[in-house]
Length: 218
Ligand code: DC
Image (cartoon, rainbow, N blue to C red; front, top):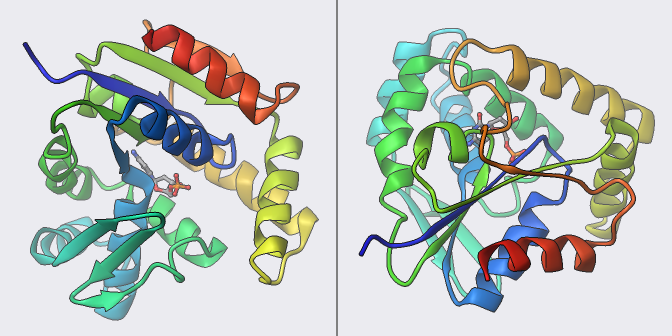
């Protein structure tokens, strides 16, 4: 029997990370934060001073990078042995990740790396194309979204809680720009899989969303 996969796709700030981690914990399954992989590639490309428009060059470095995830109470991500966990959530890194994610060469290199996360007893995979491309055969699929205003507000509060500087208007504008780039790109655009459960979390609490996703799996 194949190892079960639950995919949770959606735009940035929809609550995918929180929901995916909680559901993975409840089910005792592994968790793949595919956005963190794209973000790590973005940091690597910046470190190597790559021209971000050159997909082949970025893909070359992505292929060779030494990236490791340490899953404990909190996730620790190391790139070439250096802890980059604190750099991952910044808006700058997110914007560069969205840019390099549009290159088909980069996506091709990351495909197998992501599929390797399908380990027993199961996997919750969070991203943009988990249900449409990376785990197109997944048993359970969710598309989680919310209005851009609501997502902007959530990201603003998250950054504030982390003691990071935040400008609500700019965050919402950046989210809209990133939505457009992620949805309109030719390769693996952000679209709901035909067989995904569509959930708009604008008026739902996080616990309600978690309950609906768990109900789908159970
Ligand atoms: O989920 P996130 O905000 O951490 O993702 C950062 C960027 O990475 C996002 O704007 C687009 C890209 N990404 C992607 O193209 N495909 C994925 N499966 C995950 C992320």
